[in-house]
Structures are given as structure tokens and as C-alpha cells.
Length: 457
Image (tube, rainbow, N blue to C red; front, side):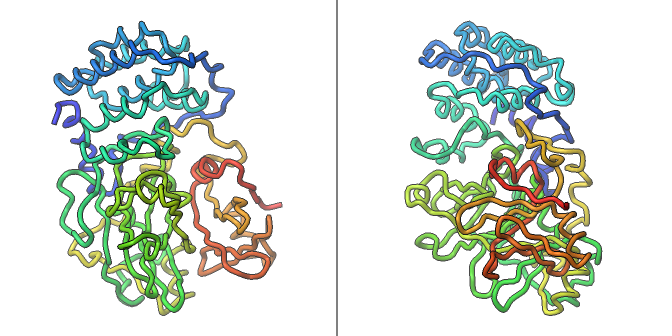
């Protein structure tokens, strides 16, 4: 594999096995639209010379690791849309000497000097990509194919994702999370030597007393389905970020996006012939993990559960969800004394630190997110619900807990919240449960941009 990739993966592999995503640290950015200049004008016709120039750049990347050889020819084509390609090259740049030429190329293509933005010193790539996202700058023709050339140098096993020419994926939003694909077979519990974030399949459960190893004030993600109740410790979820297991006779795929603060549970039996096995791709979509089905290589939108590429997209598959409540272990087991909990070693003989990420996400998003909805701070925790008619409703989680603790109701948009062992569950006007989960506000509002929002009066 090319030298540039090996340099980047030196950090990414270690982070992936520890539960990270290959990022190097917090990069807080100002994402209000007012912080960005007006977007550049973009042509609406092909620029073949730019396409040829980028192909030559990719050949240089593969041969020498340089991301700037041939960059002048790309700039001379004069197509602002190719600033997206500059962003992609920045993501794979390991040589500091390549940063200035790439930033200069962005300025030449767009007419905007990005260096004055507050986030630039932290990460030119994050800053430049946020500019492009806020502008909603169109992608150039053949962007998918050009991006494929670059990304599959790093991970050839991503090729099936790019190969689907009629997918619903917006490739502008897709970036590299710093680790490789987890395409291990179901039940493979060996360490992920290639540098992926390894899913945990059918983990061993103990009863509540067997969970004495986990502190009462530590976070769990609770699932109560039919006659079975389980708790997934946050520290184990931070390492694996994906669990496939059976609860009350139903197969569930349970992704945890550490960057979004979001644990969800999808029914994966019956959604497709042979069932679905969810895995982490190593790619991101606006700082949200990109998950896929191991059996068909179909990509899913992790927030909505809708297939966006591959055979399952062609079949129109959208995975149903069940509620995941976020609370403390002490509160959960007090409310559900019959709960199971994942065993201390995950059933695979592994040791898990209590804080694998060491506060990595405490300072705000560390990957590009574009413009953040200003109604709440980016990392305010919300409980998100989609009603039967498709309306998205978010509740400020801390406010909701305070109001419920005071004996008052929390109701908005036909949705009512209730406390469940310190976590929050949702129901419609008839009392029927609505699937709900907690997430950071920036993530929920990106994937549900028209969401209604409840905050305490």
C-alpha cells in the first residue's frame, strides 16, 4: 500500500482497535452560515481537462504518495466544483509540505481565502470541507468515479460502494474516518488486524449481579423488547461501535456512532433474504458512521435506517427501529432488575478500559458537518423520534428529564416522553411506543433538517 496511506493508518489502526475513528483530536469549528463568504459560481458543463488532471494526480498519489503533483493542471481548468477534489486530497495528505499548495488550489478555484477562518489552524481539511458543505457547492461531473480512484487506493474493499452508479449516496458528504472496512464474517471475534472498528457479534450476557464490574454512574444503552431487557455498556460500545445480537427472539443490529453520541437498534431479521449483518465501513457521512450489510454490501443511512445503495436500496429496504434509552447502569438495573448486561470481557476474552476515548468528543465535532442548526448547541443531547406520519421531533434531553422529575408532562407534536430508569421513551397519542434514541443535536438536525424541537418552557 502506498506510503501516504501507511502513514495515516499508523494512527488510524490504533484508534480503531481502541474504539476511535482515526482522527487526531478535537477540531471545534464555527459553522454558522454567516461565518462563511458567499459561494463561488460553478459551471454546469463538464470540464474534461480537470477530470484528466485529477486522474494524473491519483496516479502520482499511488506511485509516490504526493497529493500535489499535477495540481496546477486541475486548477487551470477553472472549475470551482473541483474544490471537492481538493478537499478529498487534503483528507489523505500526510506531508505538511502538501498542505499549502492544496489550500492555494482551493483559493484559486473558489476565489476564497480560507485561512482567516477560526477553524483553519486546527484542520485545513475540516475548514475547507465545511466551506463546501455550507455553500452546498455542486459536485463535478463524474465525481463518484473520480473519488473512487482516490479512496480505493486506501481501501480497495470500498469498491462495491462506489460501483453502484444509481445509488442515493451524495458522495460530497462522504469522507474517510481514518480506519478500514470491517468485512469480517459473522461471529469472527479475532482482533481486526487490518485496522477496522470490529463489530461484536452475539456477545455473552450476564445477569445484573454479574455486571458488578461496571460503575453505577457509567452510561449504558438499554433495550427492552418484549420479555427481554439488556444493557450495553458505553465503554464496550465505544470499542466495537456495532453489535449484532438476538433480543427476545429478534435479530438486532445496534450501531453506536461515537461522533454523534447516538446508539440505535435496527431489526435485521426479515428485512432481506438471509438476514442482514451490519458492519462499520470506515467511511463517514457528515460525521456520522456509514454502516453496511455484510451479505449484500448495501450501504445504509445510519440515522434513518434506509438503504442508500446496493441490492437492498434497489429493493427499497428501510430497517425498522426499536427504542434505545441512554441512562446510568445504576438507574437502569434498579428499574429493570431482570436486565442482562454484556459480560465484562464481551464474551471474547477482551479487556475494555472504562473510558476508551478519553474525552475525545467533548470539545465538539472533529469532522466536517457544514452548517449547524443554531437552535441548540451542537452537542446538546436530544431524544429524537419520527412519528407515524414521518414528522421528526426532537426533545432537549436534559430539559425533558428535569420536567419529568418535577412531575410534569413532556409532550410535543403528538409525542409524549416518559422516564424509563433514567432514560427516555416516547409514545404517540394512543399510547403506542415510538422508536426513540438520544444523539447530539448537530447529528439529529443534519439528518432530520426539518425536525420540530421541544425545549423546556
